[in-house]
Length: 266
Image (cartoon, rainbow, N blue to C red; front, side, top):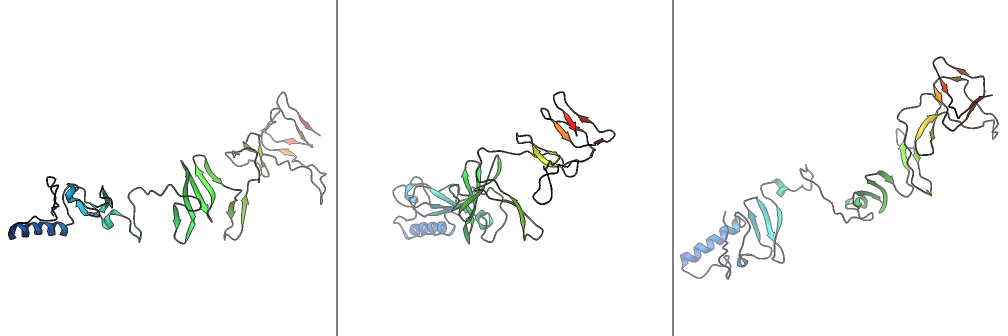
C-alpha cells in the first residue's frame, strides 16, 4: 500500500510527475500507479492542497475507513469500513444490526420516516420530542409517549374473536370536556354478578350491579336484591343503603354501618 502525498509540495500534484530522466519519470509513474492500485491507502487522510481533488478516493489504514472527497473538495465523506462485510452496512437482503438505527426525524403522518415500498403512507414517524406517531392512509391514528398509548380521532380499541372474523371494541365519545383516566381494581370481584363502579374520581371498584328496576317488556317496576350477605361490607361514608328483606348475614360476615350512615331493610 502506498500513497502519493507530500505536505511540502503544494504547487504541483504528486499525481503529476515532474520532468526528469527516464528512470526518474518511470519511478514517479510507478508510485502513482501503485497508489491508484491500492486506492491511495496509508495512515490518516491525504493532505496538501495540490494532492486533493473532488471525488478522490482513499483508505485510511489506521481505522480501515474508505473515504471520498466531496464535490466541493472541502472535506472527506466516509463510505464504509473495508475490514467489514458490505463495508459494515446492512445488505439489501437483510442481516443482523449491531449498532443503533436512526430514522429521519422530519417524517410526517403522510410521509412517515419508517414505511414500506408498496405502502408509503403507512408507518412510524416522530411527531415531536419523545412522541412516536403511527400513521395509516397518511393520517395519524395513534401516538405513544411517556403517558402511554393514545388512539386518535375516536378510533376503536378492538378485541377480535378466535378466527378474527368479529370483534368487540371500545370507543371514546365524540366530545370530552376534560381528560379522564379510570384506574382498574387490583383483583377480580369476590362475588359473581358484581359490576365496576366509580368513586367519581376515576377509581373503579367492584360492587353490586344495582341495575335498577326490572320487569317484562319495557316495564321498570321490580327492584331485586340477594337475600344473603356472604361477604363483609362497609356502607360507603356519606351514603345510606337499603335492602328488601328478609336478609341473612352469614356467620363470620360483618356489615359495617358508620355513625353517619344508615342501612334500612324493608
